[in-house]
Length: 357
Image (cartoon, rainbow, N blue to C red):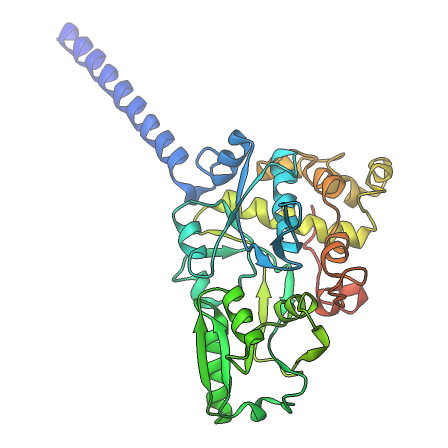
């Protein structure tokens, strides 16, 4: 009986160990394959780091935010935030492949994994957060929808648009916002839908439509590059709230967290007074908050799956939030946009970062 028992127990242990090994392999496989658990092995973050390249979905026809300059380079406010992510995750702000996307293409590109991040004047809404399946990082630009008309049109308010043809880019929140506001005010009008903002602007400038609508930042950007900017004006009324910022595919917590904190780093740096020119001086700071931000103390970067100096690289290579804004949209550009809501909370705006701790 002892021999039988010993043999049985030996066989039992062998089977048990085999099953345990399979179970561990399956668990390991699930951990590396399930993006919901935040494992860096399955995350887009891991892919970006391993490939040493970020694929960013952008706009290439919106001056100031995302467009192609005379040398053929992608430039703009949103484009620089793509470079922020590349600098933070890879250590190289230029390691970005830009994919120009239309309003209709952008969500599919994120859902299918064609792009790692969407940074293309996209508004954070309930539907996009839930049904579309995006996760929105911190808002980088607080905007509102407006309407442009000709300066000599006699139009001073929304009510004056009665019976007019108003152009709008299809596949955007502007379509619904325009319909909602005009219905609420009882203003009959004709919404003329175009595929792409270039087409809307071309129709407006040719006179085939009386007005056109998009985010006010977009109106300002377009007006600045029109042949005769003073021949046009933007109505004061806001049709909506438009919080714009990067978004990623839902379910990948590791990548989502990393994008959040890389964006936050630009805001926190500005609050600390750290910019691309003086960041090296702050490496010797005794302020524990600054030391954690720059990675000279603690392991916040490691916790996120990023290099510990991710914020330093972002600031050194691209700049803080204020630098990015002023370079692309500020007083020294043709757009001359005020910071407004996009100023730090300490300067009358609503921007601030959660604590780096």
